[in-house]
Length: 481
Ligand SMILES: Cc1cc2nc3c(=O)[nH]c(=O)nc-3n(C[C@H](O)[C@H](O)[C@H](O)COP(=O)(O)OP(=O)(O)OC[C@H]3O[C@@H](n4cnc5c(N)ncnc54)[C@H](O)[C@@H]3O)c2cc1C
Image (tube, rainbow, N blue to C red; front, side, top):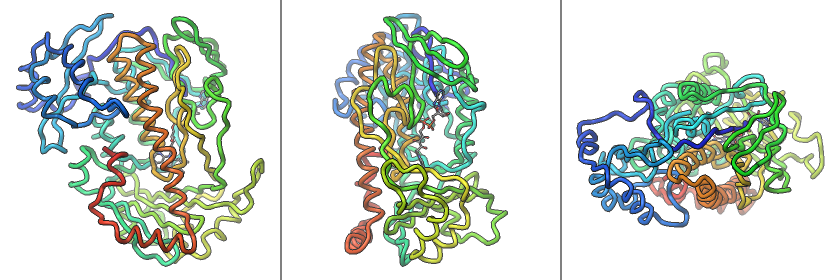
């Protein structure tokens, strides 16, 4: 997908329907704002935020005590040039016992992900998608609070919760002996701590929610339009596509792992891990067996030597999603045909009965070889900017690829809204996001290596996992907060 963004208009003014509920406390807070204080507010908040990594991608409650008095003195809506407006927002933060906190971003409204965020920020957006329709393979997606907090701010979380499942636990088990290793409770305390829930959702359902939000925000969705090239110019860029040329003020490149336009930024190629994934999503009512309570309520990850299997429910608990991943013995660099279904059963042969039973819930006619790329530091070329897997494809072990793409969209819209200078805004986006996503890409590789250990390594890993205090959030704080 590639997004063309029309003339830069600047910020805000969202649909009332998509704004957070206005409690009497928030109303009182907004009423207390003074117009002329707003612009100093942005400057002050900018100074209070750590520079590396800068925090605009996700609203953090850091130093809220310092921020709140300024927010209370600030104006509600002020003109900021080029006909735009900024709004100071102070949503209630459950992580702070319901107390409000200020965020340095203008309110980014809803529009599919980047398009959604940019359209709501007052920009004219056209989405060019080569597939004949906006649809997604029927598998699941886990979304951690770093993404769901953004969906919440876009006013889309309610719809996501209605369509998805909030699992109770992220549970790790040894795939060979079936024992529990460690878990992360995804309960109310987790949601309070991170300000948003952990959600499992069918990809098609999420795409549907985002696409409808795009249409509401005035985004033009153009399916069946393959982008061939995009050429940056002085004040914009021209996209060459199967449906002709599109001139735009900004082109947001979001064409995935095998991005055609990434070649403008790097001559790298996707790196194959030698692992391959098989997926399956089946209605639970159609399974020829009852689902145990553990699988019905949790994200369960069985980790084993050179393989793992993940299961979780989707769509209000009506669908069971299964992903089985293994190292293919026939993979070698340059090989065309490897990781076929005949290798699947052999790869999990030594695993316990729960894993064997789960292998029956997979589509065997499709497979997803696992690739990533090494981080790159340049994501902007004039009026072209990279996002999502086109910018930072990662192995899926942290379940963060799509979550990071949502963070990209939020950050890009925030930077474009915060700075009238487009080139400066794109550079700020690049500086913030390249650092964060490089860390996630690297950690995903290490995390996968830990899952797939054998021999003494596996025994040591299991011991480390078992002694971990399940209430210790050290390992996820940096990612989810
Ligand atoms: C097995 C597996 C499990 C995963 N689980 C999770 C998870 O639980 N949580 C999570 O956050 N992430 C997960 N991910 C990662 C996630 O799927 C990706 O990070 C995410 O889909 C990236 O989104 P994207 O829009 O950048 O790219 P894509 O989803 O690849 O979308 C790219 C789009 O661009 C279009 N396109 C490509 N080329 C062109 C062109 N030339 N012209 C026009 N359109 C074009 C494509 O048709 C496609 O629609 C998982 C990945 C895998 C493989």
